[in-house]
Amino acid sequence: MTDSIADLTQSTHTELLPYSQPWFDSLRKVLGEAACKQLGFYAIPPETLLSVVIPVYNERDTIHEILKRVRAVPVRKEIILIDDCSRDGTREMLKTLEDEERDRVAKAALAGQTLPDDNRVTFIYHEVNRGKGAAVKTGFGAVRGQIALIQDADLEYDPAEYPRLMRPIVEGQADVVFGSRFLGDQPHRVLYFWHYVANKMLTTLSNCFSNLNLTDMETCYKLFTREVVDAIGPKLAQERFGIEPELAARVARHHFRVYEISVSYSGRTYEQGKKITWKDGLKALWCIVRYGIAD
Image (tube, rainbow, N blue to C red; front, side, top):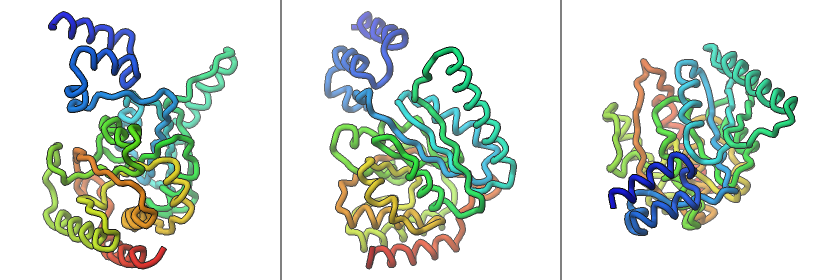
């Protein structure tokens, strides 16, 4: 058994791509179906493309690191960056990255090569600051993949969890997946008590209107099938943090299948750049009622 696992580990690193069918078959042969299920090992079809939508506003200290972490996730993906008129130098950093990406594509073309579309980056720029909701809607308009995921540009959420979050959609069980910070089995930085209370109150009120039983309506990590994006994306109206309750309400109104999966959370302080305030909480209350009553 030890030799089999050693051989499997070697072949996985040298020959098999993580989450490919051969990779999964090799693991299943050694570990068995039940163990693979508990450990989160499964196969993602090679044609599956994950669209990672990243709203960006004044994140010069984290933008390079979040891109590094997103690119490192071993799933086929495109990255859509929407700069919401950053004023701290983030936009200039993105322009440099865009130039580097353009040069890489041009050099490959001159060499007669076609670069794989995995980790292809799309850069979009808002000319005025409009808010996270507006950036999400802009990003949804550029989605090409079968699954779309919203990723904040800070480091509060861990992109390494993408495969776990994708699984209910890939396996045909869900249309929408919420990554919950409050399901309890993942690391969670302890920070503001009243933020926690407000989040639970907003989630509970949202559930009253939507008839969902979410534990974390305000989570950043929300995944949608392309069909869901096409159905609700053009209707999105909230341009700032009101986008979270609006998304939950629209998903519920369409009766899409919703799953929750626990995620880790490394929250940051206001000194570290956290942007949400009590005013956003009041707006969320209004949005919950507004979109709970009418489309």
